[in-house]
Image: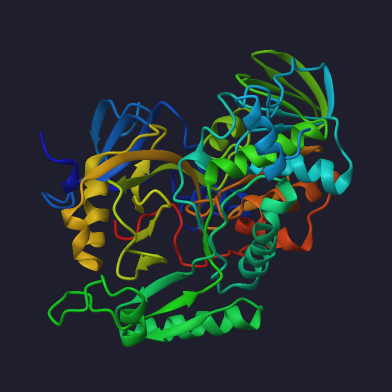
Length: 79
Length: 418
């Protein structure tokens, strides 16, 4: 178990940057930069072990109870 | 409605205060209203009040999942100010300051507005320059601002740390003398009582389950106490906006985050200003009961928990002790948390939506309480006239799309340092 103090939050892990060089609409860009579902309940999000190994991870956490269900490496896809 | 006055107080004292009228009724929801306001917090109650008072629309319901005033209007640190640099924020907030000054009389309810002044401390020359710029912008918009040097600050708050060897020495500060605090619950209750008296139905314990939308128009709302029809519906549900937005298939530039506050044990009067730390995020004032009321940063990750975790509280209070070392001697009386709509540019949204008849009031971040009257006033105007008022034109929903962000402090959903 590591202290919460060591981790830094990186936001919604399901947001995908539009592909480079691909023509996209303002709305697509808006959705990537600003718009978030931010739901109550299970939420996939990015965390960085900032004061530790500095790796980024994906965490599925309940936003109401903080229960953690699953963790993935940053390059693993959410199934 | 009984008018509250010294005479009614004396009269009711004679009958042991057993014959006061209820401050508001507990009606059963009707089948249809002209306007339904979702959310019985400060903003929702104020909106209903101004719909009735300014626009003569009284066939209005406020529906509230819990009890009125149980959310952020009952959980904030009661700071009222208009010390903004950008015109949109400054003019909106200063309009609100006028409403605050008259509120106790307007509502016939003592909201204990206390314009004691706020000081934002500066800890570097660069910060003093920034504050000078902000102060000048404020004065150009008719808002009072005074730039204080180190000695002037020391005179006002001698209990702050003015010793030589501190990490963040106090260089000076920016003061808005007309800023202050108010009794937060009284604001909710005062608006509720007047709105109820003008015919607004305040419906508590009534949860929104869904919306009735067809052909791009809103027709009503489905609730735990039955369906309610309305051609116009206003959302005022800070902290739960994302939940209702999902039911409307809308994705908003908002994340829901948790903000904590705390009070110390009550002590004798020591601080007669609101003071903010300039090298982090910490603010403090002293309540009428003597408690030191303190708050600071978000917990830093999406949360609907309505109670916070210790790391942030520890971080915030470390800043407090750096600023005012005597705080380390005080015992903590209470800590609590509330959930905020954190918008992506740190400014709120009061606007129409792509659904006809659906109006949105959200994204208040750290500053919802002080905005209560101005938010209610402009939102009532937006709903009644079906167009935004010039005061809330800058708080549009599509500004994120067009790039007209209102980034007063460059703070959005992110904490000060994360």
